[in-house]
Length: 72
Image (cartoon, rainbow, N blue to C red; front, side, top):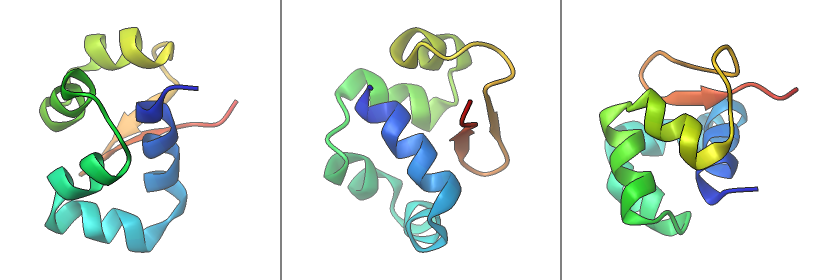
């Protein structure tokens, strides 16, 4: 599983991490070990890049303030 997908899922289930992400997303992404491409995709909410980097399809992720992946 990609680190981006792991982080997206963790943001969806861990309220403390989601709050931390709202305050300092760059540190959260760095601590998760995301690549520069993964950070850019998440920061810019680039859905096409997120799909390519995670293998998710439309309908498997959503965003309010952060992007979250739905478990299958």
